Length: 111
Length: 116
Image (tube, rainbow over all chains, first blue to last red; front, side, top):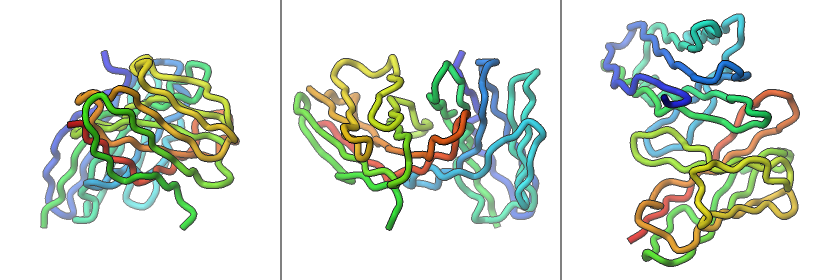
């Protein structure tokens, strides 16, 4: 089983749609969680951290479910500019700060 | 520009040659990470440094790979006796490293390696 698993997609949605991605992780001791965004041929950039209580940043909402070992990202009112690959990131905390990225979920928002 | 920089941006080499990549992190960042990314995959962890100390190294990293961060500032990644399977984008990232759990990593533009 992979340490971090994501549905690769692609998700094809119209502008204005709401879309949700899930990501599962295998190490129950994992301490920190993030969503990164990667545009084609660019480096990854932090979208948002994921806190235990859940957090929201504008149209983006992230949730953590420790019992089921998954995190989610919800995008409301999708924009064309949201088209990108969304990477789930976990620090499995094996005593250090090794960081594991999922393979990413591709999102295409269409006009 | 005070972001993470990497050099070179592209490297084409023949199988069996050695290559070295450089990463200059954001100046006040203590942690530095190296990743490898292939098409359709997320960045794959290779190793990371806390200041000049290399604290963890992936099992996937064979003996042909070595990384250094001699003064806790820039870092180099060397691949010896390159193989075609080493062709990938090599990404460097840095973070402040001042908190207990993982913090935001800032990525460089990467070095794209092609092994012929």
